[in-house]
Length: 152
Image 1 (tube, rainbow, N blue to C red):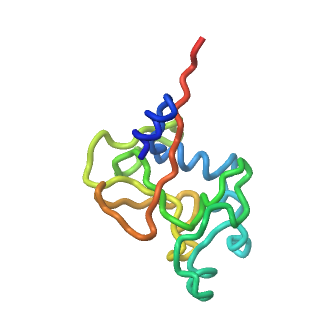
Image 2 (cartoon, rainbow, N blue to C red; image 1 turned 180 degrees about the vertical axis):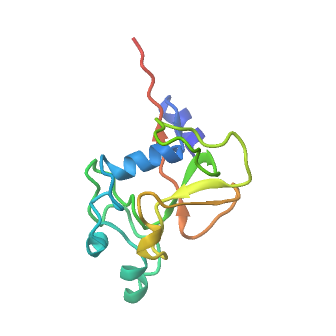
C-alpha cells in the first residue's frame, strides 16, 4: 500500500519506525497515555476492551470518532494495532537515544497502539509487541508515514 501511494503521490510513504510511532503517539508527553496518566479518560480517546466488548462493538471502528492527541492524531491508542517498519527486538542499554532504528533483520515486526480487543495496559504509549512480518489479524492495521526531504 505504501509503495502504491508513493507512486501515485510522487513522494515516499512508509511505515513509521517504532521510535517515530511512539514520538507521534506521546505528542510531547511522558505519561502513560498521550492525554496523561488518568486511565478513566481513556474511553474519550480510544476504542479498547472496556468500551467495545461490553457494548457489543467488538470490531475496528471508523477513525476519528474519539478525541485526537495534542498533535491531532486520531486513534493513536486502541482501535487497531499499527505495524511499524522495525524488526522487533530489545532496546539498547543507552539511557538517552535520539530517533533509534530497530534491528536490521529479525523474525517479527513491531506493532504499537493496542486494539479494540485489548485492556488499557496494552494501549499505553510505550507498550510494544511483534508478530511475523506476514501475519494478519482483524485487529491489526497500519498508519503511513511520509518521508520529507530537505530540498533547496
